[in-house]
Every structure is written in structure tokens, then in C-alpha cells.
Length: 362
Image (cartoon, rainbow, N blue to C red; front, side, top):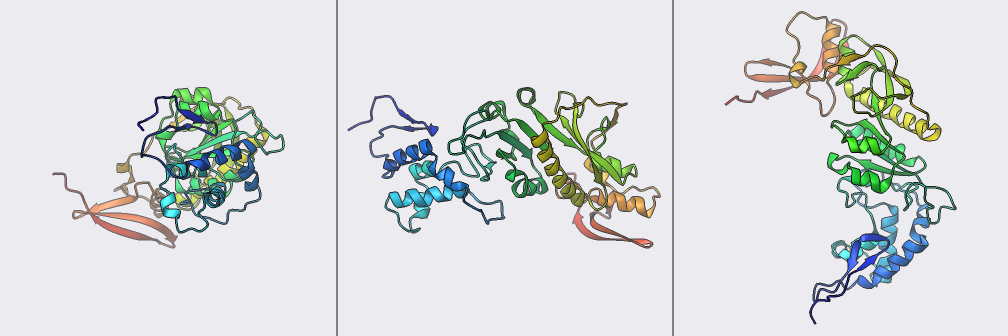
């Protein structure tokens, strides 16, 4: 019969999809697409989501509860009454589209929360939400402790929450599409494109009482200077690093190893995000003389050769003890000794030591 030369048909619920005739390259389940289109117009499966409680606690789920519900419902409409065909249907383009956006969506490593999730964007009425306005928020972070708190606490706040863990997914096109009220950056290692923070209200979290402590590695720089507590600051992202006006400041303990501090920080960030979302405070300019911290290098993790106190040595080890950070180390006889989990005892430090061969310079 050949391929049609007519224009393609687009689907309203997902404009990325198009219907064309391509000879033998067909799916036998395309007849389910109009049902999905009707469901999108009526908002039936999303209304049902309000009744769901997701018992899963892990972060490797591919679909939210709505997607799983659609898979079950539309599968039965298509004549698949059991799960025997699930693996094959997972590869079917029509069935994949019918299920809808997954937690690992077309945006790449981007997760949509399945809590209170609306289909429309800020300022528009969400089908089935009884007239309430659904607001979009984005959280961009890369650390496990922040991601864990996002799923357990932040995603349960009112609104539609999007988690981004890959810098390639944070771009101006996404920002324009979602029109988020805020973009929060609990822990982000990369420079954000100026077009992003000029188009949306971006909020970063910094572990110092700015303008004191602007710059890199605030936790390590503070502990190295003998601080046992600090202030966690929520400030607006601007062109100058850590120079933006301040929304909130909250006390933060610096006791424990670095990973414990980061976990404590992640929970405090969640509380501050909730307060910002509820109150929408106006940020105030920073006041005082700036003190700039320099970002530490891996070589600075070397245990100092000069005489230091036991407490100073303990602080040096603990402030670097977190996944993704260069551990405190010393070198001897062609080996590198990496130290973690330090415990300060009377007159000694106990720690776990990992011994690895030094890399050859050849």
C-alpha cells in the first residue's frame, strides 16, 4: 500500500507522539491511544492517584502509581488480562506512551514525584483538582542524602515536584516548559547557565553565614578553622557566587563526620524549602564584609606533616569522610593509606584504614 503522504496526527496529551502509516511497521495496540486521549481529557487515572499510597521506599522505581494503574487498566482494555505479556508490552511504543511519563522520563535522569502530581503548569487549572492551582517546583541535586530526603519529605509538599540529578537536564527549555515557582539547589557541583537563573527564581543553600564564607568547600573550611556550628543560608542565585540576597538562615551543627553533617543539612534544607514554599519570603541583601573561602583540592586531603594536635587530626579526617569526597590520606612506601570513620578516644584516634597502591606516574 505504501506510506501515507498526508500530514501526521498529533495527540493532545503528549505532543511528542504522532500517528502515521508506515506499512508493516505497526503496533497492534494503537487502538488504545484514543482511550488514553479520553482519559487525559477527563483526568480519570490522575483523580484515582489521590487515593493511592505508594509503599515503595527505594528510588529505582520506573513508574509512579498512576503509570502502574494505567498499565493495569489499559492492559485489560487491550485484552491482556494477566502479567504474562508485561515484558513484551514494555517494548511496545504504543503501550509505553499510554502508561505516560515515568520516573525516568524522556528528559533523561529526571524524576517526577508521584505525590500530588498535576498535569498542568503553574497558574492553570488542573483537571480533577477541584479548582486548586498546581504549582511547579524543581529540585536539582546530585548527592544521595539530598535525593533520599527529596523522596521522603520534599516531594510530599503541595505542588508538582521535579527532581533533576543530571546537569544536562537543567536547561532553559525545561524551565520555560515548566515555569517553576522556585528551583532549589541543595547540593549542585556545576555552574548554572545564566539564562536559567534569570528566567526562574533559583535558590541555593550554603553552609555559612554569608557574606562570611562565600565560595567553595564551606564545611571543610569552617571545620579547619575550628568551628563547631554554622548557619545554613538559603540565598538567591546570582551571577556572582554566593552574593545573592538571603531568604532564610538556620543554625547547623558541624559535629560528626562529613556525611552525617550532609545528612543533617539535607533534612534542614527540606524544612527550609517547606517554609519558603509556604511563606514566599522576600530575600534581603547580605550585610557585612565578605570573607571568601577557596575550594579545596584533592591534594589538600593529605594529612599534614607538621605537628598537629590529636583534635586537629581528628577534624581533618572527619571533615572529608563522605561519599564523593577525597578521603584523608598519607603515603608511605608506594602505598596510600585512606582513613575514614574516625573515633576520638582518650589519647588516640581509631579509624578504618584502606591501603591502596599509588598510581604510577608513567
